[in-house]
Length: 353
Ligand code: SAH
Ligand code: SF4
Image (cartoon, rainbow, N blue to C red):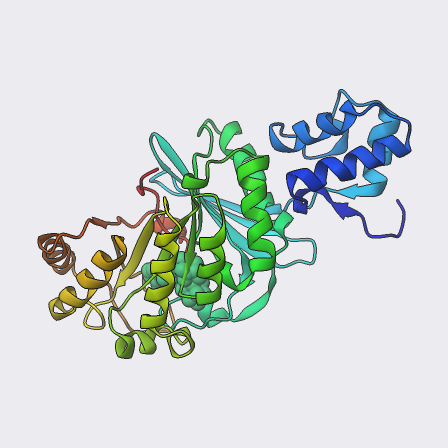
């Protein structure tokens, strides 16, 4: 193997992948269809190593291995919940660990992926937030979670992954340099429909505006958690930099771009953000941008004494929102026994699409 860093094929957008491979094979006097063969092994196929690309001559496999890498994460641990939720802990090349979760809710199989190792946003209710930020993931490390999870799911008879949510570790809109290519690769490379891919953000306004500019209909989830700035500030430090009115304006721009759909995520913490008096302002925000509201019982973390709202309070809260014309879903907690519900890595699986 040469010392020069090898290009990670999984980090390239489909067009760049084709060009890179075409140039490689041209340089070796190989026919042009070789590039398509490799792309097929990467996107439709399951090959984890060059040697599995059995329709390529041995010498070509060796040359590919010299020039390129497939930066898929390596499974460190897998935990399967009684309810069928599967959590993977992935080891990246430098030893960083990130998580992804497969959430079956037939006919869908949703994959929740990480966009950063850790997170710098410091939300007070989130275990990842308390852990701090380690580093950005590359596009290949993001889509690699999909590729490796898809392989696992198919081998275990879970069927194809139908939906992807960026709700694992990290704030995807704080890693736009990798987020944008990863969306393109999942959509145009792996063929996952844009409307089946949801980017979840705590309210990074420039990132929301960038997403609005994209022609594809990726979905957006705003982690709202409080309908009023003052309360929201106590949960989400970013609220100081991008206050709710500014976030709402960005969401309106997102809507104006057309054909897109917004969800509000609202984690219900007993006595913190579950007062029925908050319902009117929450309903108003939801109606303003046509958002669907997901109520999620808070999942306790070691750093806070908080508890989830009671099931009856969640039902009341949901009923009051519905009475104001808002579409609401109450998320069940999935994978609690394997700690897949560790905050961000929880069910968002029954979402439409
Ligand atoms: N950083 C992005 C995406 C990852 S977090 C974001 O915040 O949107 C994914 C979801 O899990 C967010 O809606 C987040 O608010 C929620 N979450 C984090 N900690 C939680 C906890 N302890 N209980 C319930 N939901 C939690
Ligand atoms: Fe980061 Fe999202 Fe957790 Fe906030 S809720 S700390 S943005 S992962």
